[in-house]
Structure formats: C-alpha cells, structure tokens
Image (cartoon, rainbow, N blue to C red):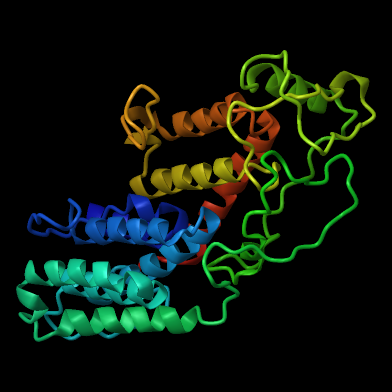
Length: 368
C-alpha cells in the first residue's frame, strides 16, 4: 500500500482533521493557507469552526462533517478505500483537487452561512489555481458537490443543536462526593447536548465505558489526591483566595480532606473530570498515527502559547518523536495543570486507544 493510500485514512477521524496529510499538489497562493489542497481546506475548516464560536467537542462535530465530505470526494476518484457515505461514481478524468475544494466549501458554507463571504473568496482563489476547475469538464466539481450533499443529508437530524455555543438542560444529582458541580468561575456545563449527537462510527456512547474511578477509601484515590494536590496548585499549597460560595464535600476519608481555597494552575474546565477528555482525544490521535504509519515513531511539533511572547502567540513548541511520548506528556500536563488526577487521564488514554482501533476496523477499510 503506497503512502498516499495509507494516509487517506486520517481524513475521516473527527479528532484528526487538523492533521490531514493527503498529498495532493497545489500551486502556492498568497491568500490560501500553505500546503496541498486537503491541508489548505483543513486549515480553512479549522479557522471557520473556531471563528464561529464552536468550542471543543462541538467544534469537532463540524470538523467531522467537512472531513467526511472531503474523504468521500477523494476516494470516489482515487478509489482504494470504502466511502463513509453513499457510493459516488466519478466520471473519468475527474480532478481530485477540484473535488476536495468543492466538498469542503459546500459543506462549510452550509453549516456556517454567516461566513459565506470569507469562504467564497477562498473558494474563488482555490478554483483559480486549477483553471476554474473546468479542465476535467467539471467532473471533480460534481463529485465534490455530491459528497457534500450526501454528508449534509446523512447528518440531518443527528442531534446537533443550534445556535452554536449554547448549552442545554441536563439531569442533575444531589450534591456529594463524585458528583459534578460548578467550578470557579462557575460557568455553565459545556454543551452537554453533544453526548446525544448520533455517533459517526461507534454503536453507542457507552460502548467503551470505562470502569468507575477507585473507591474514595482506597489507596489509589489517596495517592491520586495527594499527587495533584502537591503538583497542581496555582501558587503553592498555602491559599488565601478561597474556593468560592460552594464548599467541597467530605468524602469520609481523613487522608483526602479538602484544602480550603486550593486552586489549580489553570482554570478548571466546565466539564466532568473522569475520564480526561484531553487524554482520550490525544490517545486516539496517537493510535491512528501508529496504525496508519505502521510505526510508533512520529515527527510532530505542537505549538502553544509562550508567556514571554506577545498575546495570542504560538511560539512555544514541543516536539514528539514517539506516540508514547505524546501520551505521557498529556498525562503529566493535565496533572501539573491541576485539572485531572493521574488515574483519570490514564483511563482516558485507554479509552481513546479503544475508540481509534474500533473506528479503523469498522470504517474506511481498503477496497479489496
């Protein structure tokens, strides 16, 4: 199997859309993002989703729509893999690049009509790089339109809520140990409706449901509590800022008594702690790298904020050479930030690996 064929798999995993690697050549452009056609429209999709206000898991849903349409457009012409949506028969000579452009543009403008002006300008620029995409008689354009329409139709009524960025009602439990509660700055829960969106590949949301966290009277719990208490605070173990109007709850274990006013290094996110969502996503990415590339060795740079630089910069760079390094980093990072117990991210790591393996086995298979 050649590298192009292998890397097409990456297109269709929602969590990996930002790392699409299909090698389709495209001329350089002063307006479009750098890279090949798929990379360009992947970046455009990222910018569109982020610009809409969609946040984290909500944004991944929209990225998945675009990714699936692009994947179906590409495989309709190049073959090699089974489509995600309905089979598309491509006319002879259809351009993959033109199909990718059309599929991404049509999908994005459907879900983000308020950004139609920006998307339209990028679309026109992309078409101009390929002679208006008329050289193949419009075959690639037709394939891309069909792929976008198929995905939009397939995902209609899938549980996605609008407008973007809203929350929804959710079941509540009496306050107590292990029950999620609002955390400073006491934000509303983060888009809880996402859990009700129809799955893209999995059979159910609890298909790989992990075991519950350890007992609050166990050695494992004490160890996890003590570690994050020591390594995760904002300014040390002595606090004067207070926790806020909602006190903690006594778990009945004298070894894990709440430290009044303890705050994490980073602001606690407004979603449940166990298992770690970040650990789950990162682990799934790492598993796809391993499966698609056939090796645990990677060459990956992740950019982040450097406090020594200007506001909004991405000057800090972490380099990873192995998938295990990526997983280890996220476990420690969530602990050091004071956001997760180590056991919660370790559980997320296992969950992400399971989901990625299932996805790659039950969809996007090579054509025999």
